[in-house]
Image (cartoon, rainbow, N blue to C red; front, side):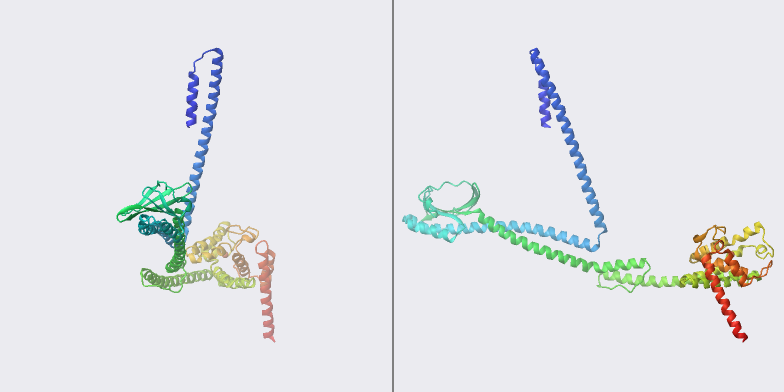
Length: 525
Ligand SMILES: [Fe+2]
């Protein structure tokens, strides 16, 4: 941006340049054009960079929002155990971190204070012994003092004894003896009442703590003891303490995390079992009462749930019994109605019961399950229940039906469906009842289904219904013999009736006839 402003300024200046001569004007114009081009390029670059930055910002913002959304979504669907453990671990981590930082800070100050105190102690001790030696100018004793102080504190860089005018009398570094110790300039860290000062002196690569203890003998200042401790000693000590603190807090954090996971599992277990119990209750599964782990609120909740579950199970059992009774009553009524319909016509008396028996023969032969056989039996009883609405004038007409009467007659399947549809538990028989007059070639009624589209139970009923109708007397014809009826079934197999089921049925009837013939022969002899 500054560059653009600068260019703008230069461009304005170029435009304001006075035209001194033709050659000068030409050069000035050239410069103006170059500056204009440069301005345009710079502005275009700036816009491109700004546009890219805006795009990147939007991209980053979108990424962060999506990430937060995903985390929130995952967190919402996470288990209660995970959430509890997560919160405890976060709380523990934050608390540990803050405590760790505070402890490190306190320990850093403590270590610094200890190092300085040791320096002051050594300095004071040397100063106390150096007074007399200074007065008596016993340089050997002073050298000995400095040497002992340095050798017993190896982390000290040097120990020196100086006069009030900073002339070195004794120095642990022999090369520094008999010199003028430079006046130290640094940050004053501490000044005691006895005149002891501690300064931090920066150097090119590191820094030192310089402790200066005054030497006073007979209330007369004799000089000072100067000793230096490298800051690296402090840093090393602080580093070691810091490492131990972090190690301890790390162990606390790990143990705390494990403990929080175990605690969450322990606390959540009853809630989880309660949740599973509610879920099973919702799905109608009743199990033994849930375990009560405690006498607290959760224990009372579990106890109440057990009572509620037991009550619901008891009421559900009663309701199921009522439903079964109701269904049985309804079935009984329909049975009565079906029998009454059959009884209306002496020619069809017992028709539904016979169709039921014949259908069950086929059903067993083709391997239907017990449940399917039960459904087949009831569907057979219901198959013509719709005839209750068919007028007797049509139902009992001795002659052939007119077109209109035939149309009324075929409506009995729809009437049957209407009757069954009123009871939810009977609706499963509707397909068999509705389609028992369908044909394999699709010319049946009411839907004109063909082939495998016809429900299997309806196809079985159609064979039994046709066979019983043919082997029963009618006002307008005599009953067919079983042999004739079977021949007719074979003839219409594949067009009216299902060929494979007809083959099974014919086989069964032939078998039964053979058995009957054998029995008759046995009785005769
Ligand atoms: Fe029918």
